[in-house]
Length: 199
Image (cartoon, rainbow, N blue to C red; front, side, top):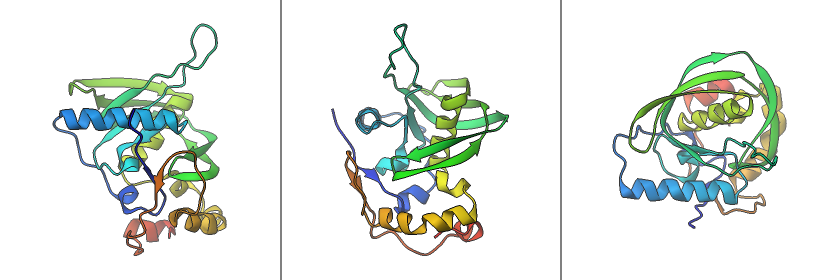
């Protein structure tokens, strides 16, 4: 088992669009296996490659399904180059993020989605999902595009969280999994962040 450190809010890698996977190497397979181990160790339901410093369009999720005895089944789904092709409905639910420890906020997302992605053999597949699984997929695909769930909050709500976000970006938070604060990350706002009123 290999556990990777998770990059915290404020790290440049979390604001960088990940690159498409065109070839699945043995190195990439090992990195994905480590992502799965990291997700389960951190009690996460999803993890994007950006969060462990890998700028590849890869996400892993735990669909949170239950077995016949009502016990949660730990099963990882690996998606390469995921792309949302259809969204329907809306619902609000609290979200958290391994890169934003101790912050949980209501976020409105689509209730039902259809996505296209590739598996580890680069076969093209389509997946329809709803509820929590749809939310997890949208959250992780956001990460691949340099978007975090706090970006979906109102300006007023983000203002109230500013102090907490600043502390997290400096590594002043407690987690039960290894983290890294990218203190060398540039503090200059991108055009998108300025437009959304983000630090």
